[in-house]
Amino acid sequence: MISFLREAAHVKPTPNQLAWYDMESYAFIHFSPNTYTDREWGLGDEPESIFNPTRLDCDQWVEAIKSAGMKGMVLTAKHHDGFCLWPSKYTEHSVKNSPCQKDIVKEASEACRRGGIKFGFYLSPWDRNSSLYGTPEYNDYFCNQLTELLTNYGEIFYVWFDNACGEGPNGKKQVYDFPRYFELIHRLQPKAVIFNDFGPDIRWCGNEAGVARHAEWAVVPTELCHFAESQTGPGPLSQEGDLSYMYNADDDIGTMANILYSKGLAFVPAEIDMSIRPGWFWHEKEEPHSLERLFHTYLTSVGANSCLNLNLPPNREGLIDQRDIQRLKELGALLRQEFSTPRAAHVEKVAGCPATQPKYTITFEEPVRAEELKYVVLAEDIAQGQRVESFRITADFASGGQYALAQGTCIGHKKICQLRDPFALQNPLIDDSTPEIRQLTVHVTAARDEVLMKDILVY
Ligand code: FUL
Image (cartoon, rainbow, N blue to C red; front, side, top):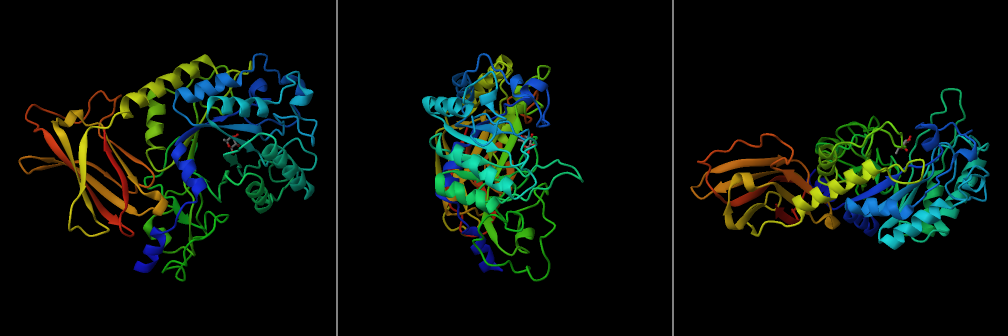
């Protein structure tokens, strides 16, 4: 049993996954004929003539993305309606037959490069326009389109695939040849990470509401992420039962009880995808979510061992809506306000603690009052694997007393423990007798192997 936990603790990310983690947040851009028909899922028979962004400006998209501190763009090169935002050789259903006449993939990728952010794309496997859909030839068609996107637009950091297919019980059934798509991406863009519900590199978190699980492990059973490579042997209970029930909307995936039943574990972190508005595409009547909602989404994604893919839908003119621009600026300003300068402190590992239950003291240069402490940010050295199962944080008073500040489950790439909420009307109760705090203790209460902390910061 213990040797299996040790194996679990040594499941490691690839350099591409580490580079992805460090981006922390990037933006989805959903743009298609749906923008003009007010739909979310196009039917595939929309005339190309309706796609007419008269003021298309991808530099404006990039500015909006950067204003909220996001580091990349993921463009819907083709959504379920099959309409291509680039003039593909393999279909007539694209920008080339629209009044727009622009290669939007080119415009967007070049704007990203000018603005110093990364570029990736979403190519929907479900295609309601292609007459080949439902036949083996569709996979050739799909690979041809992938090849165009992977070879003509510079470096691609991300290829995003879903498994959507809403053809209904009597509709066409397409068997997607994902291994073939992955092989093509590895060959043509070796630095790209691939998103898919079942791996290989990044998985879906299971909701579109912007929240990670209570314990969002990057080390997960291959029963869920069967496209990822297993890095361990079977768990000690793998003969006693199985994880075939496991689904990506389940609440527990990488937790201890589950991994013991697994046939093997892989490194596949979660992406949290959410739109800035209720819909993925632009609809005139929709408003962006509140600043409070977006800030909390940041804490429950970037601050919960995941990356955030926040969707910004261009409007019919081809511009990000001014209401969204305003909200993104507010978000960027709030993130800078809350997280730019950590409090001056000295972090020390307490000698003599067990390797899987270490304690770290954080001693402030100047004593602080409880109400001045806002966040504790923890990070494991994720390149070596993910290990921490649970931790607690206390404030230590000079008088010898302790005050519980936060508790949590896993840490991983980044865990933000929020002590005060900038939007709360009433934060933790305080009174004049609350002593000043000179020191905090971070106590890891369970881990799978020796804990390797990378950062402990207080804001
Ligand atoms: C889903 C799609 O069905 C939605 O339309 C949207 O694109 C979302 C990001 O992915 O699979």
